[in-house]
Image (cartoon, rainbow, N blue to C red; front, side, top):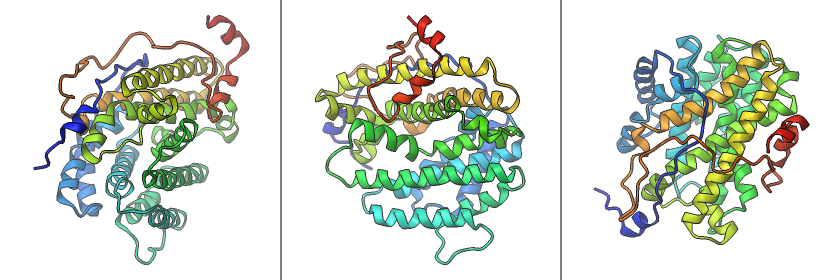
Length: 366
């Protein structure tokens, strides 16, 4: 049994409640979806370690998929749940391990991308993760158009490039700047290919010109960022206990602001809530004129943010002991944001999001 050191427990923080006024929803096939996904994952031999396989089996991939995408037929939803399983296995078993260098991960992600680009032929020395993703890419052809397959493949390039960047920082004694971390994490968390699956699972198509609209691009990136920051806020204690991992928004803010973790947590929540407020207003603005596939896509973005939090609130993966003497906030949700300003955050990588708000929206925000 692993003994948790008092120093690690002492660095834990109470959980902050989340502001997300998007209504919850759940696909009725959640349990069936999870059972099928766990069986499939074990058959793929993605992980050689028994302890890791048991950890992954408790991740509730069916619940995650059913909460973030409570629509569509079971078959494409099954592919999404399998995709989640591969991403979690890749993250836990390869990306977060100290013995894997950025060079090694760059080779693995390059092989993964080639398996996705040319999926009909098995490549030499194909890893279990590459094989699983190659199989998923072939199965996607049953539900996705060529345009959608191209988008998903491009999104996988965003994700895999982020993994290599993340790996380089994990082996660096320092932490990245806040601006770099925000850019890195929105890419490395795997949200780009996940949001590219929304229209495939839902069975509709969005024209390229709609997805390339700067307002829709901003909403898409905001979704990636909210999910990545929410993950940081609820998983930091787990990561400290499992791997003493401080590549996290809170710890990056400690460095950026030269402050203690409790103050950094307050700043992280305020940043997160300001972005959530922007998302809600910009989504409302787009939905006033959006129709058909674009409307469903934008609604799907909001559901992904909400569903991810619904899943995390009950997932055993994130249940950890509280810090000694600390106060654990049992409330998961809150009704008001910590920061409802419509002023851009002072981060060049994302400040352009606020430029997409209509002048009338800005004028009434106060």
